Amino acid sequence: MHRCCTLRNSTQTRNDVISNDGATRMTDTFETPFGVVQLTCDTIPSRSPTQAWNQADAYILKKVQEDYGAALADKKVAIVNDQFGALSCALDAFNPEIYSDSAIFKRWLKINRQGIATDVYPIESIRDSTADLFLVKLPKNLHFFQHLLSLISNNPHVVAYVSGMQKYWPRSFFQTAGDCFAEMTVFPGVRKAKCMRLTGVKDTPQIELTRTVHMEAFGFSCVNYPNVFSREQLDIGARFFLENAPDLTQAKRVIDLACGNGVLGLQALLQYPNCRVHFVDESDYAIRSCAASLTINQIDLERATLHQNDGLFDLDLSGCDAILCNPPFHQEHQVSSHVADILIQQSYLALRPGGSLYLLANRHLQHGKQLRRFFNPVRQIASNDKFILYHAMKDKTETQTKPALSRPLIGKSEQSPDDTERSQRRHKPGEPTP
Ligand code: SAM
Image (cartoon, rainbow, N blue to C red; front, top):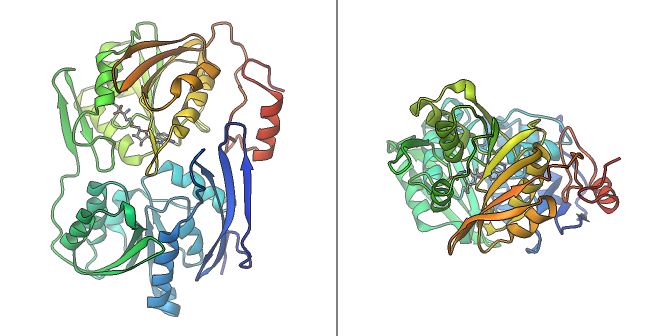
């Protein structure tokens, strides 16, 4: 059997690389009934150690092995909503179909497959799958879970295993599973993880695929697919941004970074007929929402480019005039400024000298400090008890384009964590790079 994921003997090793801002990249081994896989991921600074797999991954693999044993080789296996590739790598020999909404997942899967790409299909194509055994990692969002199960239960002979950590598994998720499947077996909790098996599909309740939110106060509407941020209504942070929207008269090339349904970039396109907007989000459904929102607001599609991407990694969008960003403030289930910090650094690289980043900050996160590491001047456009809207300008005299990054860049610009660390010690923002 061909495998491209690293299999090792079952000795536990852990290899941590810590960069200057405390971001840590960790490689360790994941022992599964199908072999031992070596996996890498970033951890969240100042949080308890995280790794590329958790007990929910271990549990679901154990259950599937117990229930099927050698018969698994005759099954058509599908994996849905894997996070860093733990399930996909462990079951690599079974050639699973892999479905995900996330560009972050795709990036880590490639890393954990030693750089070898594999097909990852969009969630909607589960509808056409002929797989008879699904392994599903529990998503955060109930509506998205409902959507996944309704797609999976299209095939009446399917068996689905779902696993997640107990504390992130509200009652409503069981109800949803019971709405789609006739039989639900919930296995006892193991090491704070839960797992259930679903069989015998029911007449799946119809769910609304898209929800259109009309924003009378701003004169436009957004279309929201499942899993998109703030699907039911305009987010209060986004509302605050729109109410205090920056003047973009001089901006021709704009990025809506972490765009969700594209609400910030849409307002820019509607107000400033000369600008073009690049919409970037890691979620495929966010990008689909953006595309649909552009259409219902009758925007000339020549003025917009859509990118499903993990931040600005490997996107050549340099020389931009302005970036609009309402960044994520969670990484998985934990509140964190980690992703926003990376987006700030990437924004610095993408802007032309004199270009502007407009960033909405939650008051409880220290984005101002990170902005000042790279930008000058940094000022507050507006604030209330929850948010601060910052205007951070890239120095007009700035000529260098590559500040030292506090996290290794991955992909085309791949360098080892060690290299990044070395370059960080040598170079500060403002210093020329070698
Ligand atoms: N801009 C939208 C708004 O204001 O309503 C959405 C903002 S929401 C707070 C943050 C968005 O960041 C989500 O749509 C999420 O999918 C996206 N996101 C999270 N991590 C990301 C990453 N690494 N790269 C790109 N987008 C990311």
